Length: 253
Image 1 (tube, rainbow, N blue to C red):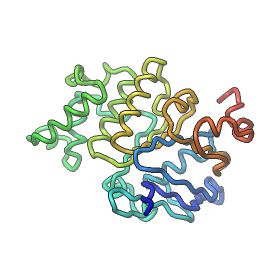
Image 2: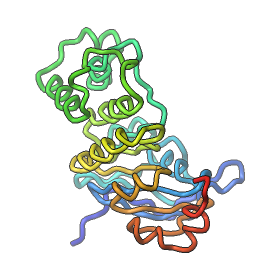
Image 3: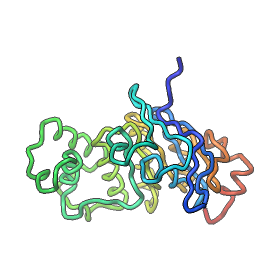
C-alpha cells in the first residue's frame, strides 16, 4: 500500500470579506521533500502557508497532516496545537531576543513552556544541552554561541531562526523567503543548510529567487491569482508558457 503524503491540501479555498484569496487549491507534500511555492506577489503563496500553520482559516476544503502514522486535520486545529503536532513556521523577519545570547535564545526554545526568567535559570537536562550543541553545529554558530544576536549577519540570523524551529523536531518546516536580503555567499550556505535539513523533515519555501529555487527544490508549485497553474520539477514549470507569461518572464520579479 502506498504511504500517505506528509501533507495533503485538498480543494482549499480562502475568502476574506468576499475576496477569493485562494480558490480550489489541491497539492500534496511528501516526507523529506523540499517544495517551493512561487508566483507573483499577491498570488496566494503566503496565504496558503498561513493556512497550514493555523494563522488563516480556510473557507472550504481540508488540510491534513500525516506524520509517523498519525492523522491530523490542521484546518480544525489552533496554531499552537499545529506546532505541537509537528509543523513549525519561520517568517521573513527574524524574531530573536536581542538582549539574550545566541545560546540563551536556544535555551528559551528548548524550555518553551517556561517563562523567560524560569527558563534561563532552569537546570537543563543533558539531552537538552546536547540538542542545543547539535543545533549550533548544524547552523554553523557554535563559535559565536555566547554573543548577542546583533553581531550576526543577516544570513546568520536566518540560520539561527531555523535552529530555533529545529529544537521541537518538527516534521514540516514552513519558510517565507529564507534567502531574502542575502548576498551570494550566504545564499549558497543556505542552500547547503536546506539540503541537510531535508534529511530531518520536509520543507515548504515561499521564494522569489529562482536560482535558489532551481538549486534547492525537489518540486515547485506555481500560484497565480489564488490558483495553482502548474506543478512539478523546476525544469518542467520554467518551460510552461503560462508560467513564463505571468511570472518568470516579468522583469520586476
